[in-house]
Image (cartoon, rainbow, N blue to C red):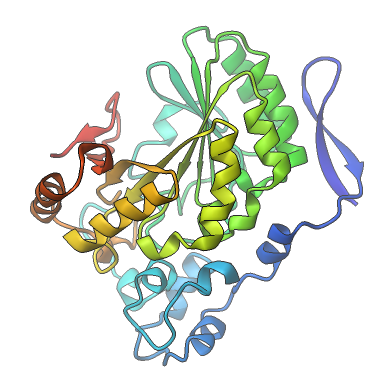
Length: 345
């Protein structure tokens, strides 16, 4: 028996109990690699050669779904997908400017789990969990235990309902799609009942790591909502956009969901012109438009991923010369306390 969220007569999210049959994506979630040595063994890689750090894995848990791991190249210690998820010794070193809360989330909290940084938009932290643990994560130290849960969600939704200035709600986390469709449904229904809301935006990396997460039920939830649905994927490299993701996104496109992508510029992963060109064209081939290319948020232990602003601007200049404008993402940095993402080029 697993918990199910429902809306009661007072319009509150409540928990019921009902047997839920496991879906393929939930199986992939349960069967994810949680030990770095197991993944490295499958990839035929020597832990010492890749700089594996047990202490880094202890500080921030390791998790990689097998569908994502299947996109990695065996025998390649520099594989760009592996580099995003492998805890390495560089992560143990602290650099100047690294912060536990690099983008000022805590200062923007209006209610537990509700962040309000930008005019007209508010962000709901739906869960503290993710299907994949990216080593560059800017919320790796966020105190989710104080911000997520049914009671806190109801308080956050009450705050949104009372604020006529909010026209767009953003579901984030963790990853909001870690919640099953039957848990998402009452939340989306309550949001759709708020007359001031026009758009529903979901930021997620789960379809990239487990494409089967895009279920028919999820497509119906988004396609039939009164709110205008937008899904922002988090793909950083063209190799993450395989046939399974193509097939998973097609029903969302047919349902009228706007598909965008937000990437992070990462040293050794996508910090060259060819990688960014290939990513942009792969995204468009899957029906997704590049949206933002983020400079790294300087969370503790992430300095080895940082790319200089000079290098980033060089890449952007080259992209403008070689790609149509609609395939060139906006290079931005998130600065704590600023009312918008700060353009960098």
